Image (tube, rainbow, N blue to C red):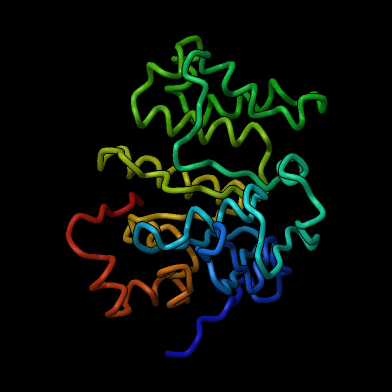
Amino acid sequence: MSRPDARATPGQANAAPLLAVEHLSVAYGKVEAVHDVSLIVAPGSIVTVIGPNGAGKTTLLASIIGLLPQRAGHVKYAGVDAAVLSVEERVARGLVLVPEKRELFGTMSVADNLELGAFASRRDGRLRARLDDVYARFPRLADRRTQLAGTLSGGERQMLALGRALMAAPKLLMLDEPSLGLAPLVVREIFTIIAALRASGVSILLVEQNARAALQVADFGYVLETGELALSGPSQDLSANPRVAATYLGHGAVAAAG
C-alpha cells in the first residue's frame, strides 16, 4: 500500500495550512507511540483522525499542543514552528485542545469553569461577549451557570468542555473523543455543534473512535493504526473504502445529525 499523503482538504488546496504536522514521531521512553505521521489542517476545515484504541491518537494531539515532546519531526501552526512556543503561547495564539477526560473543575460552577477558559485573553475586554456567545450556543449551560460542574450530565459536561475551549477564542480546536461515553442522541447533538463551529470559522482537528459520525462531519480524514498512518483522503472516499467500512463503519456507529 502506498503511503498516505498530507494533502489539502477539498477546496483548500491553495490555502496555506493552519496546522502542518511533518514526519512526527513521539515516544514514551523507548516505546514509540506515534511514528512518522504527517497531516495538515487547512483553514476553515474539519479534519478527522480515526482509528482503534491505542493507535496513538491522543498522543498525537498531546504532542501538537506541547504536552509531550517530539522524538522527530515538526509541528507548524499558522506558519510558526511550534517548538518555540510553550503550551500557554500555543493556546494564546488560538490552538486549543479539549481533552478526552474533559478535565473540568467539578467543585466550581459552570460560569467559573467558562471564565477559566479565557485565562490567556482575559485582558482583551471581550470576556463578557465570549460568555454571551457560549451561552447562546449552549442554552443548557446558561440555565445551569450557577450549578457545580460535577453535577452535570455527561452531555452537559462535554458542552461545558467545548464552551470553555471557545472562551479562548480558538482558531484551531482539537477535540479528543468528544462522543466518548455519551448516549446516541447526545452524540448527534455534539456533532451538530461541531459542524456549526466550523461554519462560524473555527477549524477543527477531530480525533474520534466513532468513525461514521466523524467522517460525516469532516472534510478530510486520516486513519491511524499502531501509531502510523494507514490511509488518508477526502472523508467521502474513506467512507466508501471497503477496508474502512469493514473495520470502522460496522454496527454500533452512530450517524451524525444533519
